[in-house]
Length: 164
Ligand SMILES: [Fe+2]
Ligand SMILES: [Fe+2]
Image (tube, rainbow, N blue to C red; front, side, top):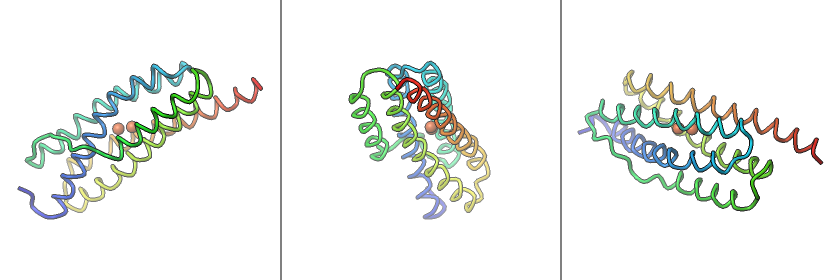
């Protein structure tokens, strides 16, 4: 039972995010495998470890609301990952494919940043401090992952110029 309609909406969003993060724990190892740059492989692998913790935080958040920790299919993440798969197939392993993998991963990070931003504001409005603090940690990780990808993309672009 939810205390308000906003809390109901929050539960729905948390379920959506839980499904999205679970999908990512399956997709990130594939992205790491497809990448060439060692730095990019390491970035995908370490973000996968963070993502597993993010799954646990969402489960904890749902449980703190008296809800079962179950996801509900996230169509947006399905679409983003399908598009990433397509892009991946368009280039052989190398700098160009790495650039495409980064593009796909950054779309995912931005989706996550938007979604966590929303649920944190809702949780704040509902006075759910535990959820705010749990998910703020996740939001910081998503922002850091996005920044790291920016840095790697810049380096790769520099390398591509040098190799022309
Ligand atoms: Fe995440
Ligand atoms: Fe992420």
